[in-house]
View: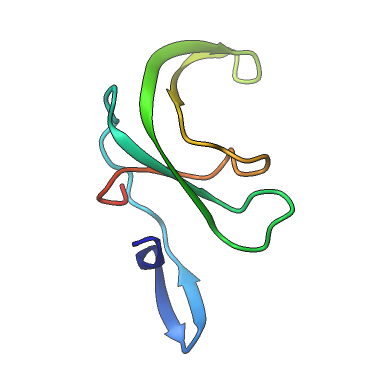
Amino acid sequence: RVDSLFSEQNGDQYQPFAMPIGPLPTLQDDVEVIGYPAGGDSLCVTKGVVSRIEMQEYAQAGARLLAMQIDAAINPGNSGGPVVNDALE
């Protein structure tokens, strides 16, 4: 499934594309976290569920922003990767 995030270009060369922004998940929705964790050289995918959705104060942004807590294992360096649903949105 995750391979469908890339389109083949020349044999084993892959061209990334922009992922669509889908609907916001709700509590207990299944999600996957995708990224390249620190110390690794391959794609890492972990699965989990949304356990909390709330507004949080972010000092760097100087604003209250929407935050979600998920129970998927997010490895160091992988925290900036996308969180997707079953439709890869």
